[in-house]
Length: 369
Image 1 (cartoon, rainbow, N blue to C red):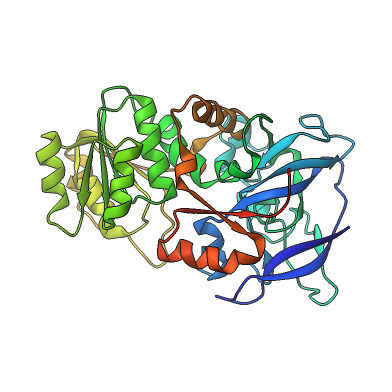
Image 2 (tube, rainbow, N blue to C red):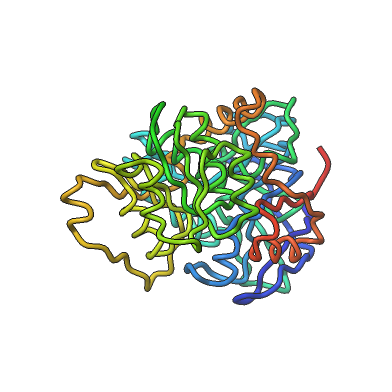
């Protein structure tokens, strides 16, 4: 079938809306008419080639839409269902079988290879024979996408579908880090470094978890003000002085937890040093391959601290995404306050606004419900 999709053809290039052809779904795949798709930092990372992935490629990995057709082996969704598309995973390796699909042993093949794991392609364009697709097993910067049954999550029809795409990656990453990975208990203290979509989702989730001291750290006063609105109890502008000293002034010995969304080694060092004894620091920020962390072993060993890497909030999407929607419906997780909508042909403006920090979570309106 013919579709319109946004393709990036060269490093740092613009998104170009072009006509392409999309295959019908294979036996375990689902054809989804895309209603809206979030723009995530990882889309920019691939466009700018900060992580290895082949170009030209159709990106997009926070899709939400309506099921139009299913393969003959699909059992989890049916035609007409509203769905959110999330990351791909094999479902068969030891990590997947143990309940940790975010650490699938074949994560790269299912999300970054530019094709299905078997090397075949879902999207084709005669003028671009080397076109790559299947980004996060979806490539949802398009009017239609084919995804695997594994990463197609049925959602309720009484919630605005155009709002839900970011739950598939950025928002589930921030919230899942708090509720799944760090398992922050009621009464705990936490410092969240970076108040983009992931960090603000973590702040909202910290309030849901019952944390009583929630410190937002950033250099953007407008974002810090929003953090207070969404659940932070304190804010620190890191330009105003020693962050560790300010954390200790608020908490005494330091926080029970820290959460870094920036990927900046100097910020991670501060996050670790601001922990109390037995504190845990979670890391989700994408860091350039040539960057290294630098802090003394005693910062970890003497205080019994832990540094924990986190992917996709350690979530099982079919369980966690509906949980976040339920919290949103109850007024406990107002992630809609992060979203600004753009039309599909405004994709380059949306990407620019995201990179400049003008918009926290851009969402592209692509089709109708």
